[in-house]
Length: 151
Image (cartoon, rainbow, N blue to C red; front, top):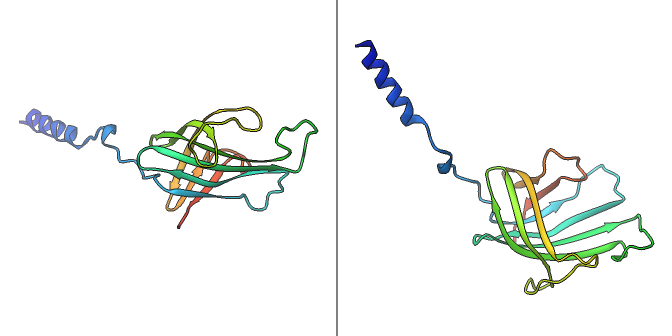
């Protein structure tokens, strides 16, 4: 009898387990705006002025970079705005962007001022309410903190 009860408890415990395939991922399908780090002196920086993840797993991105330390041979002259589009995928803690740099209409792949054409980036992320933190374990100058854009 004791064995039968233990066997029944074992069978019930198997039913309580869930497969990771049933894991519901948070929705990242939003427009996001980067928040610049505060209280950090910056000689250079960048801002995702627009970062949109669409339901069909496509993305568009406008990034503005700047620097106060201008090397004499900088092809971008210290300031560069670039556009990118492509597809994305994500898991419970990672976001993958795969696409190309483009014109400002997100229609044609073009080279940046440095000659790059492919746009591929990967981030670890944490989603807390309406805040998306990319690479949260990194230094504040490397991590990106974005808020959901309300349009």
